[in-house]
Amino acid sequence: MKKRNKIIISVVALALVAGAIAIKVTSSNKNKYMEVKTSTVTTGDIKSYLSTTGTIKSQNSKEYFGLTGKVLRVNYKVGDKVKKGDILVTYDASDLNAQVKSAELTYNNAVLQKNDAVNQNNDILNKIKELDAQIANPANSVQVISNLKTQRDSLKATSSEKFKQLDNTVASAKINLDLSKQKLSSGGSIVSEFDGTVTAVNVTAGSSGITAQSQGAAVVVQNLDNLKVLISVGKYDAGKVALGQDAVIKSNGKEYKGKVTVINPAATKIVSATGADASLGIEVNITDSASGLKAEFDCDVDILLAEVKNVIKIPSESLKTDKTGKSYVYIINGDKAKEVAVKIGTESDTEIQIAEGLKSGDKVILNPSTSITDGVLVKEAAGTK
Image: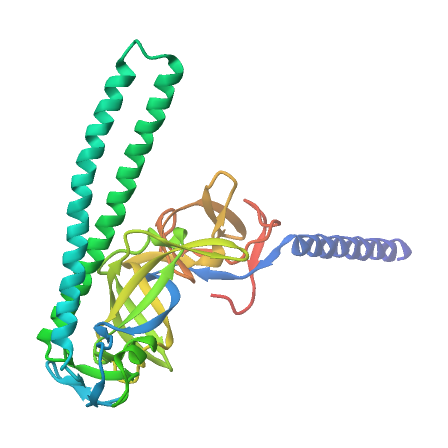
């Protein structure tokens, strides 16, 4: 009886030892699993945008500068609607003929001076020929030849510089003459060239044209029904933008459709205290009704760079890239992590197209840490999909 009890006790003891070992092994295996968050690979559309800010402008804007003379009438005020052909400002035209004649005299005098210089230049050219002949004369000493060359070069330089100055004088006189004739043909008035809204008036009845011009444009007219947005992009984004790309303009909680219509051929460099920055100017025409938008305000602009439909996609935070540029992800394969090389396509701020390597339904690990390696034991965190 005592022997039988000893056997039973021994069996129970062995069972307890075995259970303890099993619990320890299970606990050990449990500690080897890494808990990870995952996302299921899906099929859908991806849009890639360039997001920036810009300034709203009128697609059609004109600054009309004042004429020389007394302002008789200002026919419109800021905010008034005008039609093409409307007279904005009327000037005293009594002295316009005198202005044209004065401009003609100035122009004719400039031409006479230029012709006189041409005659003088012929004399200079003849003198240069004489000097060249003396320079070529072997009977002259080295010192004499050097002096002759100095005289010749001085005549050439004087002649060239003088002609440039006279050409500029003639061109300036011609511009003034044409402007005076244009003022005369307008009948002493500023006339609107298109339908729009008066956005600035810097003249008053009784003022002189000189005072008006010192204040900048006499009148500004803008078409506020057709607006555009001016933006600037850096060199890294300039190559992504193309004519005809769609855009979304955002202002005061509203969205408006737009389209890229102008890309400047060259960048503009702006020098500041911190250095020089170059940017490329781009225009986006607003194709929707511009109701609610105000010219000169800033707005947000999203330019659609690329769009793909019905593609395999994953969250951006699941993608990793090594030093060689190889892209890869980790997927759940049973109870292990599996490294999978992928080929990527279009990217948005939150999603990436997978051209090769994954299929819909695969589960990728989000934000894989350095502890996640190929073959490591993993389990999905509660609540992940």
